Length: 476
Image: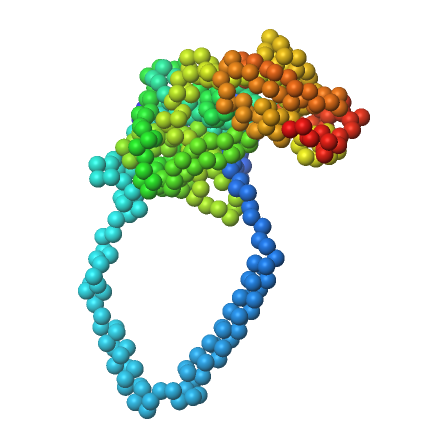
């Protein structure tokens, strides 16, 4: 563990045989770029706020104000020119003496006589941290050994992210979207665990997906390694807006491993929706970039108070990042470690895809949720729900897709009965379904989001449908 400075990894040795732990995480296979190119891609949630369009009246008013502004500048310029050149004789005969004396008096002002001593002003970090806080270098030194890199092989290539060590025997928490569609997962330990001359492969361990929960964007991994430095966990309930926030992670890939950035907690209890997932999060201006997902949001005492999860995807915005509060994450993590899924959640026992507006118009079918598979033995199967049914309402609440469907379903508990309004063969029918307990996620390969062009094939069965929206929704 010598020579560790909290930074990245030593360069590769071209003559060294890569570790068998994970032969596929090997940067030589990508060649040596002339300029910096981040390793792999990063599975990153990007929050894109809905923009607001300006009205025509506002545009006209803006143009009018601009014209007035141009006119005012022109008049001011002319008057200023005449005053400077003394065209109007606005200065008295003795102006040179008076003005000279005034300038001389101004130049003799002593800055040290000002009421505020600006020679030793505190930094932003000092103002944001309490009196008994740790120094930032000590915080980074304490937590860097507990933040790891995550590397996943997907159909699209290698994706990277970050993770936090939960236990000395190899349990690691990260974001569910970091390991999305992963065919294999590896954890890359920071150089702290080496002797100073290891390359990245020698610090890489194959990871097992213990469980993940896309609803809260959390996942737990496990590697076969002991004597790890687990992160100290704080209380997100004690976090105050304006206090110090430090982020440690792997932005833009593992080449920049254990990068630390600092800022403040900008807001608490923000609610954002990313990729149909609604989350309650902290907002921070500490820099969060692609690859930081799953990393640590740390307070002034070197304690993890959040899990970095999303950033704002806009070239016009800076300093907007989001993290899942640790108090909200721990119960989910506990269930994932114990059961592999989150207990007590209701499930219909179906998978499918949203019927978007474009598909609805093209095929003449209602918007809603298209059922593609029905789990054997589920409440949906027992109730008679079928493939290619379109769920258009639940408990008399009209839905446009999975988000609204889950909003109503999640208000219930396992064992409750819900009424689904279904569009089938040009008819509207009601089906009562007894909710099961969700025991994990079902992966439907034919509905992979990476093959969006295949979605049209999902609706071929509806080419002959006739849909009259006015009569169809009349009974709701």
